[in-house]
Image 1 (cartoon, rainbow over the protein chains, first blue to last red):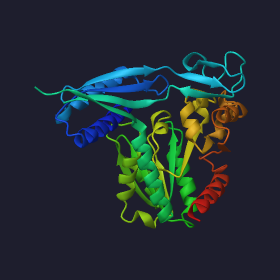
Image 2 (cartoon, one colour; image 1 turned 90 degrees about the horizontal axis):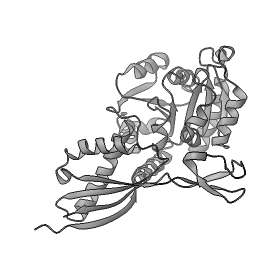
Image 3 (cartoon, rainbow over the protein chains, first blue to last red; image 1 turned 60 degrees about the vertical axis):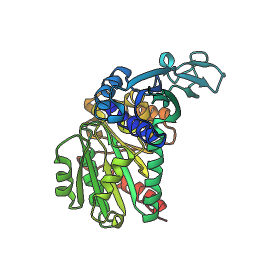
Amino acid sequence: MHELGVVFHVIDEVEELAKQNDVKHINSVTLQIGTVTGIVPDYLTDCWNWAVSKHELMIDCKLNIEKIEAITHCSACGNDYNTIIYGKTCPNCQSSDTYLLQGNEFMIKEMEVY
Amino acid sequence: MNEIRIIEVKQSVFASNDKRANELRDLLKEKKTFLLNVMSSPGSGKTTTLSLIINRLKEKYRIGVMEADIDSDVDARTISKNTGVDAIQLHTGGMCHLDADMTRQGIESFENWADYDLIILENVGNLVCPAEFDTGAVRNMCILSVPEGDDKPLKYPLMFEVSNFVLINKIDVLDYFDFDIEKCRENIRYRNPMADIFEICAKDGRGIDDVCEYLIKQIEEWRN
């Protein structure tokens, strides 16, 4: 399952940072996830809740998810449009000479610790 | 009272994997070993196609194969039986893909991996997740078979964006499916204008020689 592997990645990263910063406990972690990453937030949260219970520093650590909308830019006419609705073809000029501006991010934004 | 504070991280989750993948590629380059990552849907003919390719290349190169699956060792045994080359089975423990660390662990579980000229990684059968994690491979190969449909590059864009070359397999059954091979090529190119495309039939061996010739060229470029 995809989300589980992703959760392991995030936990590894934040645990490493926690050690570097002399942290006793991680209360919450905030992720920024683009809408075309293929990550399903509900599944991610389920995996998260299971996985954090196995890590002493992270018992009951809350997961916050901030969505980043997917926007595509058209090189032909300069239009920026919603990727989820129109995909790779520009709704303004029908060109497929387009590229994704944002929406495939998967970032650890911050963590609340003590 | 514990003082709560916020640590700003602002770090891409894929960044650490990308870093490890690049480290692995550097190491492979140093040892002159070419790592080929093979991806496709389940049942597209990965293992059969690889057996044919390996049998044609095994005189020229020392080859090791890593078979990644959620469970079982069927593929490693099939490859070993069909080709006689070293094959190991990696279990992903329920996960749908391999990342750079898992790939490295797999490579290191061969006795002397640096002795191989070519290591082939048969990734988990899945058109979604394996594409999202850089394994550290030198080249990505994707197999798409006729029964799956010519629209797959449109439905699974990332897989075709990250694949350096695509094999269209099972062309012997083209007459029985509504599969437009020109349309399929167009769909692949739409996602990835740089992709090299081959039409093959792993059952009767059609097209395999061309793929091997292409692979040899890629391997030689990497090793020199």
